[in-house]
Amino acid sequence: MIGRGIALLISWVALLSVIVGTAVQAAQPAGPAAVSSPYRINAGDELEILVWGDERLQRSVLVLPDGTFAFPLVGQVNAAGHLPSELERIITLGLQPQYKGPVPQVTVSVKRASGYQFSVIGKVNNPGTFTPGRYVNALEALAIAGGPAQFANTGSAKIIRKAGDQLFVLPIHLQDALRGDTSRLGPNQIPRIESGDTLVVP
Picture 1 (tube, rainbow, N blue to C red):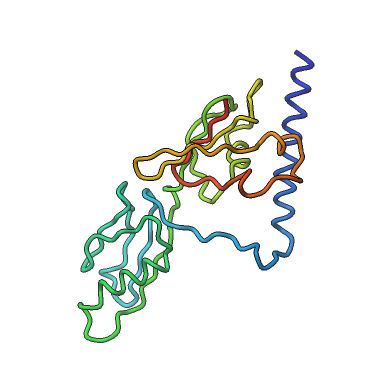
Picture 2 (picture 1 turned 120 degrees about the vertical axis):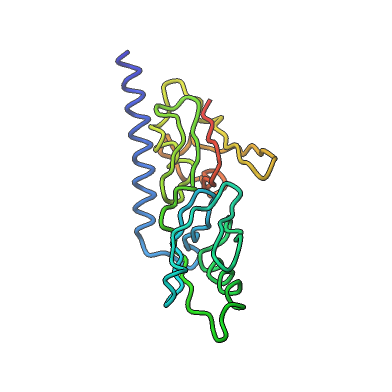
């Protein structure tokens, strides 16, 4: 039992060192290619929409499971996958026939990013569905789920991704990262978790 406890402790120390190392790299000045991905709206997100000068059109809306929401004078708006700035243009165009002059400025912001969800199942310490409120990669998702459990085969971990009615299996490489070896790891080995993904750790 003592040997198993030491092995688990070493695994956790390696995981924490990788995450800390990633955070330190992120804190360093970014080069031209190091640009964070803007947040795209998901079903389940709560949006705050303001049409300046018109209180009737200032409201919070919930993006429905089909990725849409209803907005006065515009109708049904397809929001899933769009940037907030893209929704601003869509709503502005929809309101244009209602104004003789220019449409007042439209502002769309994400009030609650509750639509970005993923699940972690298998041999982890805290399996479940998580809503972190920010983009995470596969290694961070594993940490959120409490890390690998005893006897977990992290070398065979996979991401199951939905695209419409189809499912895709993405093999990932967590084993090297858990050992503290990040020299051969790239974005393809530790990919970003997309909303609706399931990380499976056998």
